[in-house]
Image 1 (cartoon, rainbow over the protein chains, first blue to last red):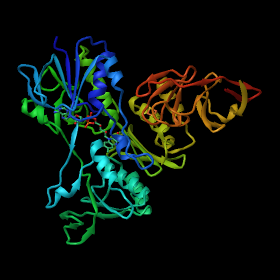
Image 2 (image 1 turned 60 degrees about the horizontal axis):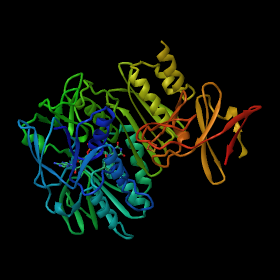
Image 3 (image 1 turned 90 degrees about the vertical axis):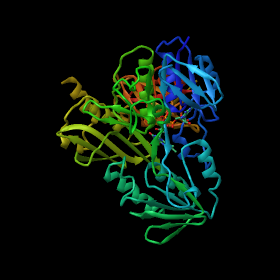
Image 4 (image 1 turned 45 degrees about the vertical axis):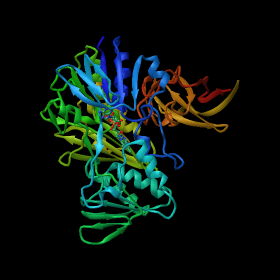
Amino acid sequence: MDGIVIIGAGEAGTRAAFAAREAGFAGTVTLVGSEPHLPYERPPLSKPVDGAVQMKAICAAETLAAAGIDYRQGVSASGLDAARRSVSLSDGSTLRYEKLLLATGAQPRRLTCPGAQHALDFRTYAEAAAIFSRAEAGRHFVIIGGGLIGMELAAVLRGKGLAVSVIEAAQKTLGRAVPARLAAKLHDRHMDEGVRFHLGQGIAEITPDAIVLADGSQVPADIVVAAIGVLPDTHLAQAAGLAIGNGVLTDAFLRTSDPHIFAAGDCAAVSQPGGGHVRFESWRNARSQAETAARNMAGADEAFVATPWFWSDQYDLGLQVAGVPLPDHRSVVRPSGGGELEFFLDEGRLVAAAGLGPGNSLAKDIKLAEMLIAAGISPDPAALADPGVNLKALLKTARAA
Amino acid sequence: MTWVPACKLDDIEQEGAIRFDHGGRTYAIYRAPDDQVYCTAGLCTHEAIHLADGLVMDFEVECPKHSGVFDYRTGEALRLPACENLKTYPAEVIDGEVRVALS
Ligand SMILES: Cc1cc2nc3c(=O)[nH]c(=O)nc-3n(C[C@H](O)[C@H](O)[C@H](O)COP(=O)(O)OP(=O)(O)OC[C@H]3O[C@@H](n4cnc5c(N)ncnc54)[C@H](O)[C@@H]3O)c2cc1C
Ligand code: FES
């Protein structure tokens, strides 16, 4: 019988395999993953414990077997024939499918300057292990790219007492995913911790022991890590002639332009009710899209709806963002438990919230904000700003109304 | 079984939780919407995260890190990524004082 084949055994692919079983799918489920490990979680890679990279498996081999998931470890899908509904694998075998899930994730964007080969990527366990094995006292690290992953790495390396410089092409760090106010607070914290920043700087060249900036100045570098974002892995989809944009394009049901092929996670750009396609690069998104795609592959007909949410840990600070804050939203700030919450209103409606504070202290409030967002309410900005007003009470009132 | 005094009922918000450390271990004590109290192991079974920082709604607590959910009355793991149940301990209120039985 031709069952479900899943390409990519990351967070999305692995969750989808289990979710297909949870949805009662009784056919074969084959999970093909090119990395030579059990499926593992990426977020811990930039959050080592006691200086060692964590290999946190998503599940045990026995759990895969017990769920009847045929896991092909260390095998890549090299070809996709959508007309024949078959996938060819790097081990020479071919799989036929009734439904296929592309969960190929994303690949680090590569530098193009001379000497780019000196820079290490940071996406996989092997790459994380390579970076941290070089993290010895006295070494000077340069991180290219002041996004979430670059800044998490900077925090970890400073925690180990290493010299760290961050080079960022934009005038600000964390500009893409984090609302400006909290991004500035995080940036200040990195400054206090002794990270050196070179902002608004292009790179002319990477030499074996330095980075030459566009203005000619040099930054000493023993180890260079490139963290300039990721590109969706669309190779197979493209070769099979599927519709591609900033990712594999899907409809709201996570179906690609071929009705037998679905996509989820970092590789998928999903059609939005308001038009256009959006691709997210976050852990929870990978899991929740995988669940919807798996249920739909098993016969359901469910549109994907979720409030985007991600977290980041830097030093002792926890950041959480729910929804998509935009610069033209009205911002309302509330102090909370040693940190700060920021709410974002679009024509009065609560559409996003972000929190930055010690540890997980703001998680509860962000969760409530997420429920307020999902409820589609327009709270009184004064109530949002007032730490004395309980968000749970606000939610209950809104739900009762 | 030894009963250990933990806190006052009023120290816990209704439909809320607090962290309680005792004997080198950490616990979470919950005050349900009906003012009953419950006690579970303090750390999420997914990663070692303090559940008392999580949101309590009805009889469930949601882990502040990855949104795993537990029924704090029984310790049952209700939502992934949490899949292992939490240990629970008897808890009661006497004259406004909460005590828990830690074995
Ligand atoms: C260092 C780091 C830290 C992060 N921290 C956070 C965080 O704190 N919070 C957060 O929300 N998100 C974080 N993320 C992002 C999060 O990990 C990703 O959004 C998530 O892993 C996406 O899951 P995915 O399954 O779509 O893709 P991936 O995890 O990239 O998995 C895709 C898998 O498919 C495999 N593959 C690709 N092509 C093929 C093929 N042809 N054949 C077989 N296999 C193939 C790849 O090898 C890969 O293993 C972090 C990411 C990194 C790299
Ligand atoms: S630590 Fe609790 S769900 Fe992950």
